[in-house]
Amino acid sequence: MNLTLHVWRQADSDARGDFETFKISDVSPDMSFLEMLDVLNEGLISEGSEPVAFDHDCREGICGACSLVINGVPHGPQKATTTCQLYMREFDDGQAVWIEPWRVGAFPVVRDLVVDRSAFDRILQAGGYVSVRTGAAPDGNTLPVPKDVADRAFTSATCIGCGACAAACPSSSASLFVAAKISHLGLLPQGQVERNSRVRMMLAQMDGEGFGHCSNHAECQSACPKEIDIGRIARMNRDLYRSFVRRT
Amino acid sequence: MPGAPLLTRDSEMPGAWSYSVMRKVAMAISGLVLVAFLYGHWAGNTVLLSGEQAFNDYLDWLRNHPILHYGVWIAIALALLVHVAVGPRHWLTNRMARPRRYRKRKLQATTWAARTMMASGTFLLIFLGVHIAHVRGWLVFDDTTSTFQNLRAGFAYWPVLTLYVVAQVALALHLYHGLWSQFQTLGLHHPRYNHLRRPFAFLVGAGLAILNIGLILLNTGAGQQLIGSAT
Ligand code: FES
Image (cartoon, rainbow over all chains, first blue to last red; front, side, top):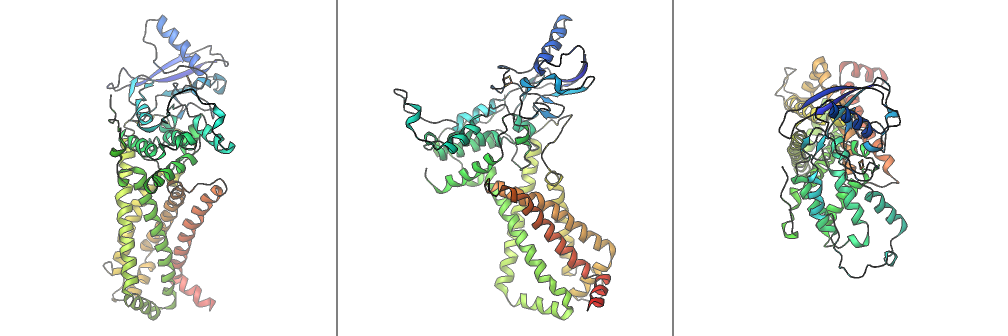
């Protein structure tokens, strides 16, 4: 199949940047989206031009590094799928494909399609952990956790921190990410010790990073490759209110 | 690289009102206060249909109950102040949080009502100014000093009537998002009841608009004729 690609090019975070158009032919429908970009880059390198910079690591949908807004949707048209797991068969022959980076002020563009998501790391450092006294590793099953609670914690834990939620949010809010992390730890017995400080510190850090404020558009849950739902955000809010009235 | 300095200690935990989430709570609660007032406002104003004497008696009754009268007055003034302080502030922050817009954008979940909150809110605020001027008699459509006559005279004038009706549509739109959003913000989320949240927002918002439009229309010449022929 043949495609017209409109790719965002930007030399560094201070550059203005603009779209560059490429015609690419003989794309196999069985290629992943990133493999298609690899082919594009091969061509660019062989003709002596700069390849397009884009983020990727595991290419199996678990690391959260790949981050492209494809035709206006973070991670592209396929629901519940990261860019690296998106296949070219989802596109039509001759289609125009617009590729943009996450556009969130708190994620500055490093180069082309690569953005700096350290803001998420700082939010995690602010409270996204549990303190455990080390010693011999305890047996995982000695701490009883009800099945439904474990399931809910696990669903929240599937967040790969890709940032699609903030990229999709009309308000550029990071609420779904923060809420997923808070539910992931806060539902489990190990997470109770820091339950209050976690929500307080993470939310304060989130506000300080320059993200927007959740306006309940629910775009995040549509964009999330792990289909984490906005119920997590409601729970995070409850956790915050709880932190003002209960000590732990 | 930009980035906020990392907060490290519990003692550095900010107070409640520094949280954007808490400002949203203020937004939700003030909104609910205003909606409750508007239902009461409608119920009180049905007295308009009983004629000028009944309406004046109602105004006197309000004046003779200063605690109720001024209590409500202070509550809605405060609610309005909070709503107007937080809404535009968050709207502005949200715009600045995306310094560069997307060239292509495909929204998948949000509603038109949600994306026009700032516009519908601003319009409602302007309408409120006109409405107060109308009721207070700063905007005169009749040469008497009677509030009742001035209200009816306003409704008889089509630009005023249109403004009132359009404002009700804007109100329904604003509430369709606001009343749903309020559940999420306040943390009212439960798998068993979630499916009721949208219909609630629709019914309470549209219901208020329809009741108000109905009352306004019944106070026009055509409405009065309709009532006359029915009785
Ligand atoms: S490259 Fe790891 S999730 Fe896509």
